[in-house]
Length: 356
Image 1: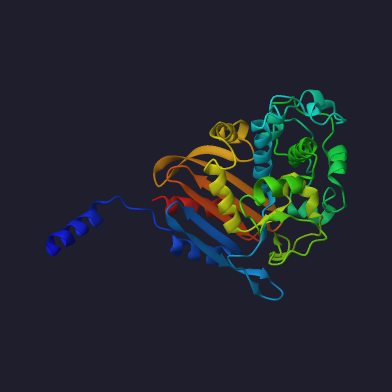
Image 2 (image 1 turned 45 degrees about the vertical axis):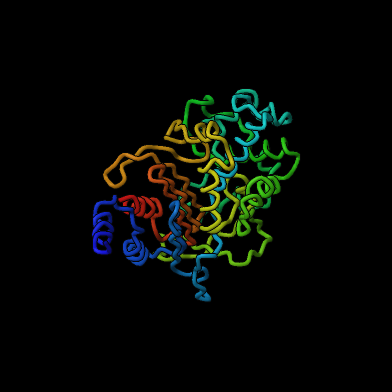
């Protein structure tokens, strides 16, 4: 009998479908080859998370990155903002097809009566682009005018997000931080509270994301990695240019850890933050395959067509990726504090191996 059971177990082990393994050897080799500095987390239901860190959180003092290291997550912030907007819609407080001035009655821009919340969410508002700096060389030479002076969010709205539309609303995809500044102000107006307080009360606290928050220039955040961008002219990493991180506001001012972002992803994709109907709207690709706060598209992974959503982020040396595959249920979070490695390539190659 024991021999029979042993044979059955052996047979099942050989005939059961293979479960994808974490590509640890590939991740380690790629990180070393490309000078990756940051943390990676791979989450799959029913299996322990893979969590690994590489490189240094501070180059001068040679402080290593750890799994609990906090990072600036740049435009992953937009996914939080889109979630808050859709929560307002679920509460009946907001209509995505209504224009800006419905909710910001004192909005001064000419597009206030024609640009809808939907168009802000998917970057087809037509507003003049918030960012005029096109590359690192431009930033080194001319600075970052929008981010190197202290502005309140009200000033950001008036000074940079109220210009005359340059495209007819809904006709052109133009990735624009200004769209999400306007959305942040709508959130504040409808809740009657600052964006960061709403974020904390509606998402961070309920999910126990204790290592995440809104960054201010005046803050000293324990465990936050310093950031370094790659200078082509010097062929070396340099400290990020000085800036007021709060000026990225609802478009890019958050910091977090890979564990907290995995928790956020699990809640979002698991319908704990939004209903399925809201998620369907968020994941519906518009122009440039952009939904609400993320890109949504079909691709081949492991030789099989799969639906994925991706939310990258980058501000100088801060890089971030939240990548989710729907089948199998797989989330990859990559956070970096240098601009050395190409995270778009890195996360795609991790996903290719993790689904096999």
